[in-house]
Image (cartoon, rainbow, N blue to C red; front, side):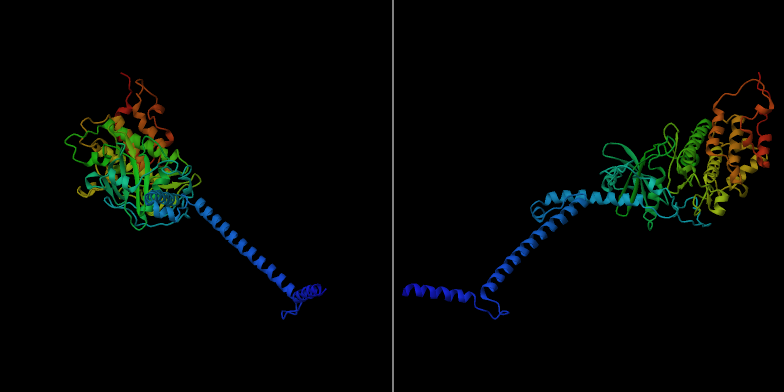
Length: 488
């Protein structure tokens, strides 16, 4: 009985220990112990959840970074153990950055700036500057695929590839030079020959001309327009790659040292003039938005071995929407070719190209430069001298003396009338380039041999007949053979 008493007394003492009150808010000991255990469990659970959420957020962040870039992220272990792989990844990543930079440049839209400067005409040996104004259709230049070497119409060339093709832009490979930049002959690794146009980096001017040329003819393909094959946009370098035309330009054949007899016969010259007119007609009438070249001149007409012309150098080109009859911009062009109305007002439309084409056609006929200070005062300006000669009925004396076989009087008269129509002081009276093509092509068809009525004597559209005094003098004084019956 004593033992049982002791056991009962010990049990009651232990229970009284746990039920005894503590200094903590007067709570019993077992409640404090239970609360402490619960709090510890909650703390461990919270720590576990925090670590798990932190790990999940890091995984999500890594996945977002990986998906937003062009390449997956590389861990530190791989960076330390596989440096060669990292180099390859770096090359691809740099390529992607260059392509994104180029696409951003080509797609960048800026509001059109309307600006008129009367003193912006380029000298005969001066520099080309692209206009600061932009067409509303700038974003239409680039679309479609943005894969590694293609943005929808052409190829991306690396700077190293073009340096190898041109022997690091060696002076011996220069085939053209101007204020816009330098054109080099290049041979790519596959053996194809190209013309590499390296634009001068004149405080952003290269980027402007780069963007203008790409927008104007990036996707255009025509047999009388120089084809743009691709581009390079790397750092500050802006380079355009064109098809190579291997027979120089029209200016070289007209004004270079070609000997006592020019290889450009009358027939070849008319072929060049007609082809050039076709190319310009396509720019004006076959595209939407239409393209105004703004720098039509003999040095921008490339020739192949068969004397087929290709209009080149679109660094000054402007896009003109169908709803617009003209665009007001800075006056750009080459002295002697710029139309007076454009030079005085800055209002640009297709008529400006028509005037420049007329001056170039005079150049083709006479073999003279638009402005030649080595000639007598009355003959320095080609346009004024040309008009005077026609009004004095001396049209046959206008033909280049280096042409061995002179043209038929009828053919000469027709081309002289085309020239006068193109340089009409009233821009609204100048013919469209499509009409000029038909006027020049009329000589390619045989004429009827039987006598014709008065209404049939002039094959030109009556609405296109000249109205000013100089043109009437040309019609009356050039070629009396048209007043005679053709019957034999």
